[in-house]
Length: 339
Image (cartoon, rainbow, N blue to C red; front, top):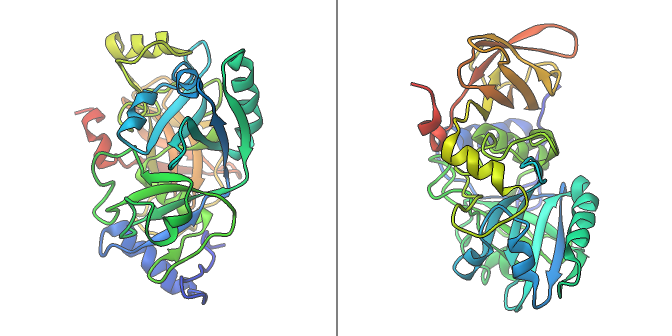
């Protein structure tokens, strides 16, 4: 069964599957810069406001909240005391709202995040509530860096995605996120809807971990998940929960494992004729005692936690058949590749 379903064009009609496949192939190969908007229904948002909000969040996030004085969004992790990942988050500064912030994370993990923040809040002057709106991702939209024009005009927060100092690929010229005040999302002319499965496919092919599948709570380590390369950690800010192990690894350790995009199967095609794989199951391979684990799958592509010394990788599908797994190092992470 094909991984994609037909998508809805900005003008309201259905894109045939073959046309949609063509658009996505052009997107992935860098031929043309097409504009898309994806409704991220798997993400939820908390609203935090009050005089102590910035100080409170500074002690929770791996990144420096003070950066929001010069940029609209911050990417970070929230760690446990042992330095393991609990939540991947985006922190937004409210537009025109003093001491108001919006914190985005995976929808399924929202109750745990809300409980944690309330536990640490103590007597801080911070009010925490669930935001009823929705998060959208804009790809190659001409007005992606502003919130005063086009579909982003109604946003309460948002701007350019902070994870990338340069373009992800030749076809991804701008990548932005916005928090909208309601689930009523508009699609202006020239911007087509990218379904959630298609968004995940593009994200996975770019090597971007997101949510508990890619970042198992209480297990994943931030630097193995490429947090530093994604501009999600500050080495100069004050203390935060889980800082000790993260800083020690950065300054004295060697990162032997990385979350990386992989291609499943023997052929280099863009079809999705690959059975469901066993996720979070060990990979087989040579060169390392523990080669890694396959974390998530989007058709022929996936994300895996891979030992960079491992070679000849294979993974099992749900029927017990083995498939070749090929690591596809993204350009933005090429410096970490073993010579």
